[in-house]
Length: 291
Image 1 (cartoon, rainbow, N blue to C red):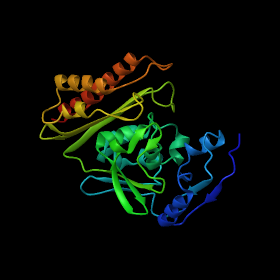
Image 2 (cartoon, rainbow, N blue to C red):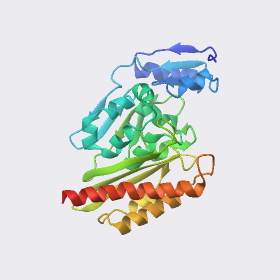
Image 3 (cartoon, rainbow, N blue to C red):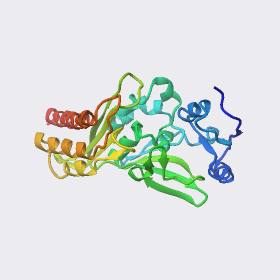
Image 4 (spheres, helix red, strand yellow):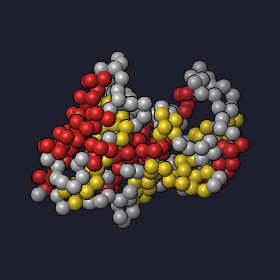
């Protein structure tokens, strides 16, 4: 099937792109990686009259690591750039663990990190990772820039907090409060499939205790779930079997999955509990070996 006719524009600056989006009045779509948009167009599930291609705008493909440990990811930074980054493996192991599990190599080579966040798919990998890390999206519109915590970015399935004439120009990950550790686990029916359940868990360790923690859940609700109470229960003490078990139970309570062809709701809650336990136990074991 072929998409319906649309007007195509390839602006050279962000300001020009914002002006085009303003003219579109809410009906225009941004093209970055296109790995979600193009299939929707071909199947005619989406038929925007205007397509604004931002790939010609310079300076949006950066992946920058600051001295304090914070990270900046531009709107045109591809998934593959994060997957191949050795520095990311050192700086943020939770992100590194997820990078190779996003879709398949074809999608990772073209799709963008920021585009994935803005797409707001409840089964998307990166939003959960950013929730776990306390990350934010930087949006730019006619009134300048604003920073939106990713936990507040997604309002529902494929619904985000951006206005029609704002562009997600960058994602930011704050500096860790100690040594960053964590992981990402994903249950999928086959390689490249959407998640049946996935969990991102991140902990910063300082002086043997958890100084900051975050847990994001995928595919167990109408949007990415923030298991903030589970994460908060870990802060202030060491990782122990008891604290890990308690956090896993609290995370499973947050999950609101539906029974479907992928599994029952109880089964998916069990996977949440199992994945949280597995990630945190691995972190605890690595700390014991390093001691």
